[in-house]
Image (cartoon, rainbow, N blue to C red; front, side, top):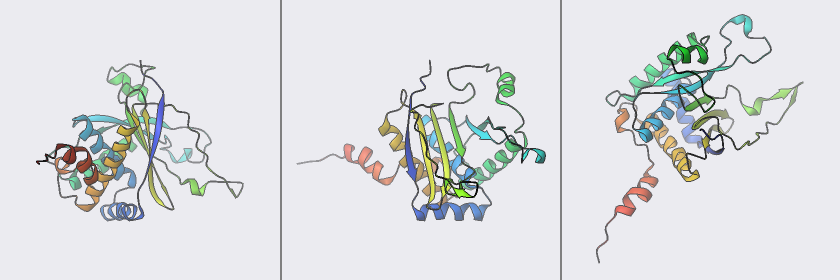
Length: 239
């Protein structure tokens, strides 16, 4: 069965890349959520070899105006389909992501139970039935938390658990964008997830630098990792 033991690693984008991501989103009328979901989808596609899969993502469940000020948790999770075609340019694919996200939010009243039943996936206590990875974007900055007019400090608690194989949470602060990679320690070594963090950053740099290339042309490994892990070990020396 699925082991819920997990770990976390963190990635913070430097100021230059954070600004480049914001500028790219503004120029192309995308939300940061859409850009980072696309980058996460490309990462999963590169490491799995799959070009069509589902990623879980939480939605607010407050699609009606009357629910905006109602106290309570309406949040639930929906599957989001990722299918980065090799021949599609990154710009066109991001526009498709934008459309798909809008369509998903228009149907966020559907529950995961209804969708699982529709697809005949059933229910399981051992992880997700429709997806085993998740992406989420925190809708607030921990810098802005207040209670009774006083600032409060967000103190995360590491439960050393993982809900799924891999969950990525993005957030924005005054310093820029940062990401938390929560992973199953039964499936991944810490060094593997550290590599995925660097690969995620490399993909983001490729997207904002040149979105006219295709998904197939995007490098899922940084230049430093390529040299250390591929080129240097394979370099032949002659006396």
